[in-house]
Image (tube, rainbow, N blue to C red; front, side, top):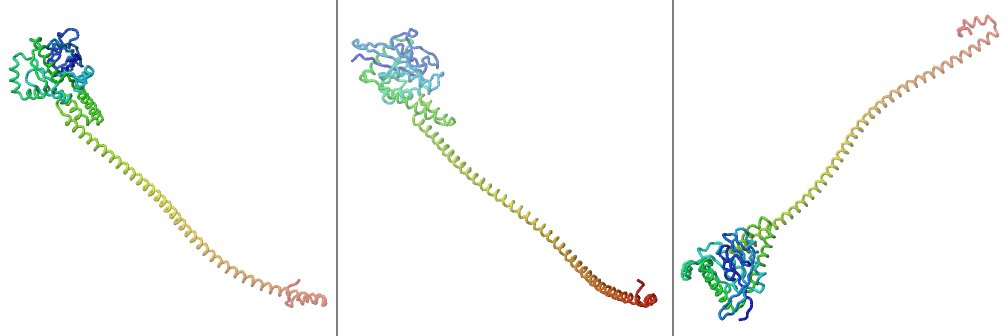
Length: 394
């Protein structure tokens, strides 16, 4: 077998003992320089992927150069699901050529829901191609292997795990029997390498999972804030193994449909507003025209009232003029009568004048006759003339 470097990935739930198992497999004691940090409880000591290089000596003294990668523990209470996934995905930088072995480390005991979800996450992340490359390393096993084999048969949860990961399984006690654990780990790793003819599990499946998550995260981020909660929760639970891709797709599509309906309603509302605005504009124009018509009507009424007032005034003026004309006629008639009277008086005066003139003429004639007589008869004639009725004495 060619002496090329083989890459082994250690993964599992926080507190399962994967960092300890990694140190044992890597021939390095916990706490020594270069060893993986070992945490306790639900907070993972490993926050990003780390690697140590070591050798496995196989049958016949063949040396297998190996790189063992320790990853962040699933279910870390300090990290959000997306941060856990980001931390876990950093192993790609340490295994550019792919993986030969995936050791899923699980503490013996009743499988809790979050532990089952973590196993589901590994299966989802690497795809079906990882099944022959993945083995289950069961820790904290202080009894004979046969005991655990019988117990697994009684547990449907454990049976599903063993059946799914086809690379095999081992039971180790890292605390009390580290040397035995190292031997079992090395034998398991060599078994998987030889079983797959040293063929590596390409990272394309995991990279596709990373790309898938990134793309779906963009779709979730594109949703309005009030529609993101459901899909974001499912996306986070997908990375925890609690949900499937189909559930995520359904949730995203459902919220996209909601947003599409909102946008359609918004467009309809905008169109309705625009139509209403047009109607308001038309109504405003109609009102403007009505106001202008009313103004013209008012102006016409004012002019009509003014004309009516003027007509009344003219009628009043005409009546006054008619009255004045009637008075003038009466005055004219009176004047005419007066003129006729005056004319009659003038005519009478003219007649009197003529009579007077005749009288004067007669008097002149008498006077001339008297003077003539006096001049002929003398003083006696004057006395006779005075008493003759010819007028007074001149």
